[in-house]
Length: 478
Image (cartoon, rainbow, N blue to C red; front, side, top):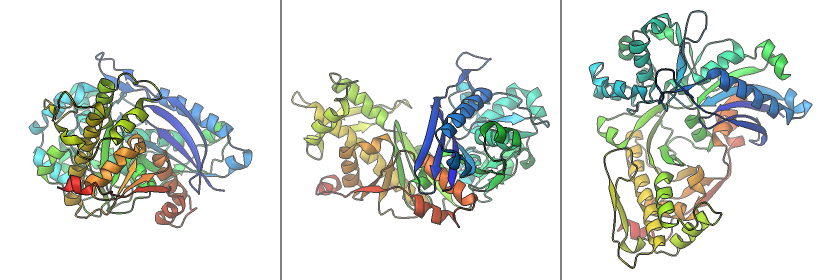
């Protein structure tokens, strides 16, 4: 029974997961992850890679302890998934020169605001399609160039977190293609690094180790690590990288199939064969990343979601907040309200990420809190509809259904409202580990268990529960 061994480096939790070729989770162990304070300012955030590595090794040993001796021998491949953009510079001896600047760190905000001093912002977006967020890799490297010039001058290579971990596993430096696609330093047309960006950074393509596609072999497990873990030194370590791409693939999505990841934020992405970034979509938060398969793309839009619903919940359902009755009470009371929330509407912007504000229209002394809750769900569903329209225009496709994953997918009322507002079925993934599942598909394919990645996806994809549009469609379409 071939097994994939996945290092999952999340911003909240570090995990090691063992998964078989049927997509069954065999063993897992996790430890909380956390940033450390940067030395220059109290509000600076860095990742301590030694701390992360130590915790992951503890997780690995604990996960292996849950497997039988036969199962440990069945491990055929190891890969790493993590969040995007973050990484570090290394010198010619392979020594890390400066801590990993976290995506949480505010130090790059002034750099982002001054981007127009370095590059034509509109043309840059048209070349790489990556939205302008202060945590992008480009801004971190510009900060290092400006504030740590002596260290920057010594840089021989830049590695993303996933590649730092595979470097420690194998002794081989590489670049996960899915991570490169988050950096704001690539070019969609060439499917590689953007030469104008590299010129601004004073770097060349040689500063970035060879790019590896998902499932491509990086190397084998170092003998010292193999001995420490009790594993074979012949086990292949294969490229994976950015967690979003593997969550999409692990959900079972094919091309032109939108996937909604619903949590504090909602991220709507699709796997497309073409994606043309247009400047007009910047205001919609459109970003385009490299797909898990070379030559394809993941256009996506995002907005604050459950964060807004929690804000409503804590203010109007404070009597049950923090109890087991919290979500059932909101959903039950919202279910008693007809489609359209009796004329109640949320309008404007409630996410708190800009100077824009929102309001609740249609309030009266007779308004019930269930109406406000349902109006919030309808507001979020219309945000989803607007995002889908952008995605379809950019990817030039027409979605027949939406796959939904994440904590927000567990709310049956919300799923029904989504289906009715979109007038499309919502397919809810019956598994919480889609990122690890997607990574395992590529790991096992790269290790030769499956002939191709499509076969792996077909064999391992999770079950879906479909929510069809109801008769309330006519209310939202009028």
